[in-house]
Amino acid sequence: MSPHELNEPVPNAPSTDPRSPDLWLSLATVPILMGVLGGRGILQAVQELGQLSEEIFRGDRLPLLTFPPTAIEQPETSDSHANNDATSGGNSI
Image 1: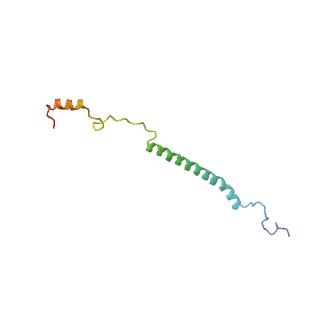
Image 2: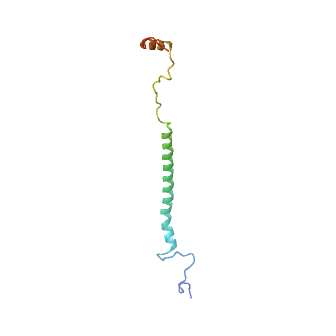
Image 3: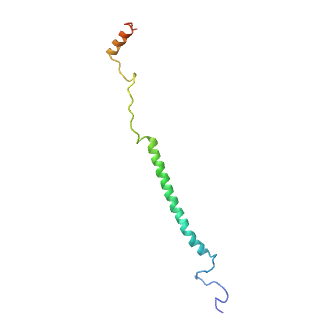
């Protein structure tokens, strides 16, 4: 009797059964690899977006704002005392 007559599978021979695990494994390989590569790309894009938003919130790319000096920051001079005396009627305490 030959092995084909006993309906036993021949070792290392490709299976013609449509439910073969080898067929399903080969069909599932490409989508899984694309999912892994796509996930890496999305992860890298999200990380770069996070770093850019940190730069914006940190203020590195914002212009410097100049504020007008306030009365507290301006040193008082003798001229300003004379002007105050003249407007208040000369009575200073």
